[in-house]
Image 1: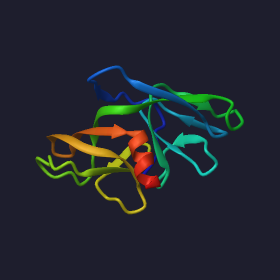
Image 2: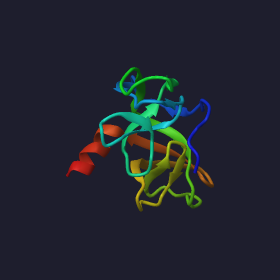
Image 3: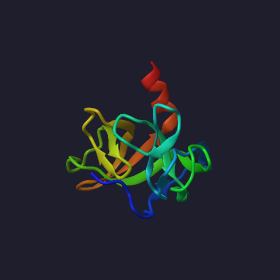
Length: 144
């Protein structure tokens, strides 16, 4: 799949104040608003690549195309509920299936070499669900 090349509005569903964090961005890259953000092996944020540790969803565009690693930071939404298109999501899938990302804008129920981002909270329609995501819990699960 191809990473985002423009900002993408996402629909968030809140039950409280948003939980946000800022992370340093890799050199020579752009993270667009709405992108799933991953952490590379050196600890820098980037548009998520399969197998990255999920950090959250970008709140705004972070343009470090002309910068060195860490010159700018990306603000991410770390926890909440978000409506996402999910490939392979069956009709009325309300069984809390794990949701993975293969890049910053491709979501699937397939675990193989992808990054865990959360769980189906509510089926909306074929291929669309509300996903509960929590970057801290994902990180903890990976370290267990």
